Structures are given as C-alpha cells and as structure tokens.
Length: 346
Image 1: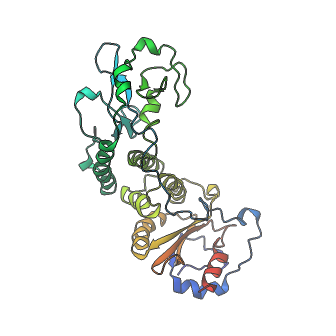
Image 2: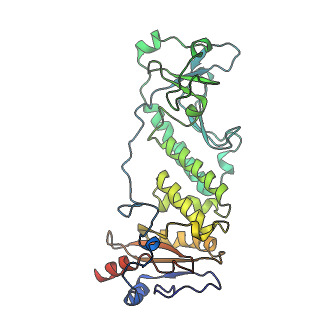
Image 3: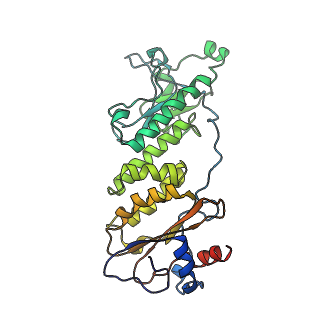
C-alpha cells in the first residue's frame, strides 16, 4: 500500500504502489490537509484543468469547408493544375516521416479514402490498426454525403497554371511567395495553400474524423520518439480509453507521462506533480494500470504513486490519480485535501 502520509519517501529504490478506495479511507486520517509550506508545491500543478479535465468534448460533425477540394499538380509535365479529390491520410511522409494528408487528381479514378502507403494497415500494431479501421469505415460515408461543387463554379472557374502562382500568398501560414507546389481552393476565390499547409489538412479537414486520426497518429509518433519505452498498446489505450479520443488531451497527458517514464528527464524538470482522471470504469482503470506500472517502475530517483477513489459521477466509476515524489522536497501527495473531501462526502 502506498503511504499517503507526509513521511518522506525512501530514496533507496523507486516503488510503484496503488491505493484502493478502502485503503484511502484508512489513510486519510493521517493526511495533513494544509498546503505545503514551499510555494513550488502549493499548487496541484495538474497538466489539465481540474474541471472536466478528461471529459467528453462536443465535436462538430464535419469541417466548415469539408467540400472544398483543391486544384493541384496534374502529375504530368504540363503546367496546368487539375482538380484533386478529397485529401486522405498517409502514414509516412517521404521527408518528414510523419502522417500527412494527400490527394490525387480526380481523373485518376482512385476511390479509397485512406491507404497505408509504404506501411500497410495490416502491419500496424493493434492499437493503431483499430484507429485506421475505424476511420476506414467512417470516412467514406462522410465523403459520399458531401455536396459536390456548385455547377456554375464547375463550369466557369478555370484551372490555374504555374504562371498564375508567381506571387501566390499562403493563406495557411503566410508564406509569400509560395515556394514549390501551390494548392488553390476550387470554391474560395484567391485562396491558396503551400504544400506543408495542404498536407496538414488546413481548410477542409478541421473537426473531421480524418483530422482526429491524423492528429492521433502524429502525436503517437512524436511521443514514441520522445520516450521509446512507451509501447503502441499503451499509447492506444491512453488515447482511446483515458483521453476519450481527444488529441489535445492525449498530447498533454502523453508528454507528462513521458517525463515520468523517461529516465533521462530530471525530476526537477517535472513541474506538474500529478493528474486526476475521472470517469473511468474498473476494467479500464485496471487495464491502464497494468500497462503503466511496468513503464514507471524502472526509475530510482522518483517515486510514482497511483491511487483511485470512487467518482461521484456514477456508481461504477472511479477517479484515477497519478502523482510523483522526487524524494527530496516534494514528498507529499498533492491530492491530500481532495481525498479528504471525497471521503468525507460519502
């Protein structure tokens, strides 16, 4: 049982222990509910807002410009640009080695929305494969429901050529003139994007399932590069079950956990002491802890504590709390007062 009292943790060896709700009730009597003396520890310092930190967000069903396809290179030597199809996610950018959006000329006859490029979906780890499967089943329905271009635009708007882009301005990042390929919106007048902005889904894929998948895969790759100990299975559960498929919270919590897990990160640089994740079922909490515990048990300079208490939001829900002690000055639980209030209210 993790000791939630105010006694300093032993510096001999890092321990990863869990406090059950029953044990929390027993230990709360010995918790000092007063704020710690040092100013650095006076704030909880959780990586997200304590109010609905990991709840569900209301999402738009589709982007405002979801039916805005672009004129781009025809793939031939001629300078004229042609109308492209809706952008879809590729897994490995030739230069950046990150997920990106790509399209092809509409007359190329390609009907797929997502494909694996150099790496097929079947070669992905189960956690990422499930996301790709979800997107593969959902996105075609969206693309089929999108309205086509207005007939008067399709009749009157002429495809631009390379000479028309000599002084083009990127409406995404502001680059002027645009170097390399220029992408022109087929609906909006004089709206252009550079190649990088186009590959990031700007102007057309905001608030869509495709963008959510792109962001998840991008964050997944960045976290793997920052902390190689993080497995794809762990990151998949973190995104899907803990962060409720919200990319912003996935990136924030993932970076915080990477600092806890990575031995190269000095304890003094881990500013946030802990995080509370509400609304978890017992099964999800147990599965996540089973993946988290081996990752955080290899550090000897810090102690990582995991505890859970009942969540008043539902009879079968729990709040999972993860916090660290540097075994020097920051040794007290930042959740002492919150635990006391939670137990006292029962």
